[in-house]
Image (cartoon, rainbow, N blue to C red; front, side):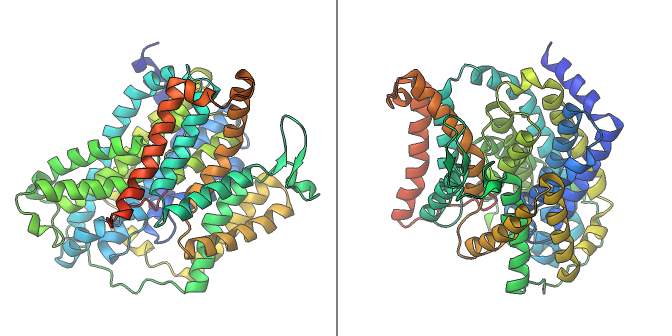
Length: 508
């Protein structure tokens, strides 16, 4: 079968009536998640995993997995759309990759051009979504064909690279990020050892024999942690919401934005491919590039439409690019894709090179659903701009109980365990104190998810080499991955030692 046949089959899966509903729900919830300050795509996806498990209960295993991943992926790229709304209207980023949009978006809103800024960000996001989707279609199969040739040593080194890349760019301190990665890997060792059957760090508690459930830790640290943050820090939106008059951009706006959208989309897509880079880095780079090549760089920061178009296109293209390493190599390149990977594993589907062989319906169905979702987002975002502006005004007193209810019911519906409910609250408190002290949470979740796979691949590689650790350096591909990982972590370190600011990825 050709790639086009696979895409058409995927489109057939995505257009099934229940999957269309899941795509719509995903992008709608994602937009709201992006619009509400504080609830980023990571919290949104983590919160919805248990709910999707309940919603797809009547479907077969493959259909349930496909529908759930379609909805969760919709939340991921939908949140990228929604994040620009608060950036433009309130000067408050809805999620971290929209930080750059505040620079010119809010200035445009103050000049009475809020509608044009929101429309251009929606059009830019749509164009970026389509460009990244084309890249995803053409790169997915060749990459998975290469990855099938990987042995356990190569896989172990690839996972080390993924962890080092996210640690190198997450949070404000690399030491703290590496500590969180190590902490995540330590948490992954809890439970009964698969090979020897020995209990590890269970302290005689039967509930820990299965290990810590990724879902409980993710929902606790992100969603419940956000609730504690809102309550304890009394965060509120005191900003003045800008008025929206004309929604459609002028011909001049479209002319000024076309090239920045194209540049931002391509740049964002390739940055999204890199492990650990993430959408925030893509939007920063896109903004810097536009300012560098502009004939009038002085207008940036004063309401330049290019300063909205390019970063918004870049952060959406990065979310599409980030799906490639997840689907083809089984390596999440950001915190949100790490949580998506946890969802795959929960449905007994292993993302990676065999995904396109073993589960073609799921893989191509999810890819095709991104086209349907981007189309829906454009249709949703243009007329509903004023409605989403009202969502921003939702008081915390209504929002907090809803998040708690979804967290508790969601985790209990999947785990049926009161121990997990206590654990979710404990993880919420830990998540709050860690993020308050600038410890990034994405490396912790990634370490927890990749830990068991790293251990299995390391053991398999050492069995092949009779316990010789040199196997990781003797295999050329494995050696290349380890060298790249080392470079990835030393360059930001050298730059920081020289006193230069390093762009950090807090979306993770």
